[in-house]
Length: 472
Image (tube, rainbow, N blue to C red; front, top):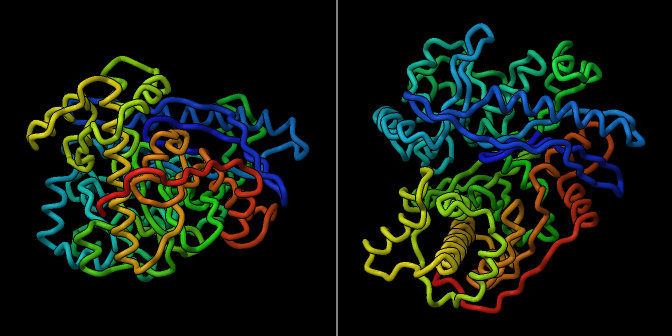
């Protein structure tokens, strides 16, 4: 089960020594709901759709040589959570894009613990919607006896067990970046009860089994007893497992709604320079560190198309390819105005007016402006990452849905001056099933072995730089 910020999917993975194959069992939208108190995830509908998809996967598995599912793993976006009391959900979880979630919370936290101290403890970049800030702004946690991140909440509904997977826990701001354990001292200082947070488990751990009655609700009684295995439940952690690194001098961009630009390290980078550059140190599978920064992703494009009432991205990209990159403005895609849903072309024009530059003149120019602005931001982030980590990079891997955007991948190559290897598209789902498969004994070895299987079973596209490099 792979739940993204705009859509979800249930994928059947078939894995063996020379086999790594995905089949889509179900795809569904993930549409938030706005109520008078803010923007929420429709978590109950997501759970229903995920169950329907799991039943479909079981039917597909019946037609394979194995004849059945071996396990299920769940990943999703980070930071957001459900509050429970006596096992009952206290309202639909808030959406991290809810305008009222972060400001008051971050101010309240930093009154107690400085930004410098917090970074030394958790290694996280400042994002106003980090879990620690959301909890500080959410007095409802005082009525709860458990906080579960989204994948852990769904796993709880499947199994009855309450656990928190470690890679996703690392995004909360409440995990000690050096020990990988809950920072109980920080919880005490922030008046957060320790009992709210479930015991931690590592990727590859069997959390429990699907409870009787869960499968029957969707006509799939055979799901009863199916192992639920913790994976890199933060979708980026799973995606990085699926990055087909062939050499250590590599960087990645996990490109979807967000563009996660980073390096895989063995130890965190906790310098003040790293904090000021807003780089984060999140947990990865097998004890690795995902040293990265969040950059705007294809959200800008999807919201632009929604504003125009169009769904012809392929045609728009073809038209944009005919617009010279030098003729469009480069906007700061990290400007906070681009985070909430809305009219992105109008906001781009507004940004241009404020910075005394000519705005894009038509739809094709607007799309080219977005493409070049995103690529420039990724190039700048990558240059900063390599400097902060004292690492050299010789190739950039782009995975996720954005890897299908050839115009954007070429722009990244041009602005970084580095070859870009695009694919696989389904890196997150691949990383998810690879961790499950290793836990089941279908494959063995470390991350290098898992990634070798990705390289040998998937077609990858290479983009060589031919244009202008980033000023970074």
